[in-house]
Length: 176
Image 1 (cartoon, rainbow, N blue to C red):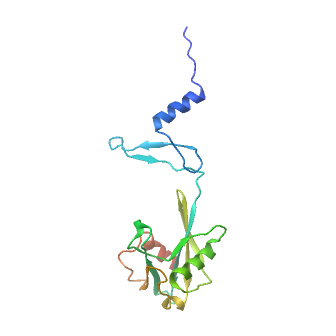
Image 2: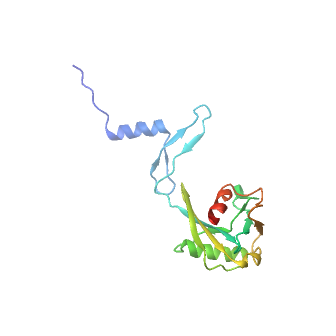
Image 3: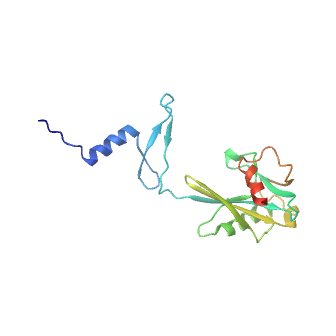
């Protein structure tokens, strides 16, 4: 009769950590599981920390009252968006509501104050949330760039080719 002892939880955790090439979250120190996929390339893919704070952003699409034109901004930052067209927007400040952030960001980027933004969509992923807003105003034609990014109006039926990918469906959704 042989006796085998089951490994204790500590030994199992240590073995799992070795097998999964475990890393720690920079935010809270929790152990993060990683995997190598595909194994032949050796590239590591980390699984995000559920405790990591989300960064909230807003993006707004301003249309004329006839819904024929939309105001867009040609992004310079972040680098992955550089040269792409999207609605004006940015990060929420601590304690700020999404609607207040949308109004503030739009004024900062275009010089025009639009008080009545309506949220119509939200997207989230690992570490971020984006709230999408729409508004309708003749002030669309008074907007000008207040930063180093270009602000322009486009016919809704003739949007620029370098449109940020999700804007291709977010703009029609805002009009529906």
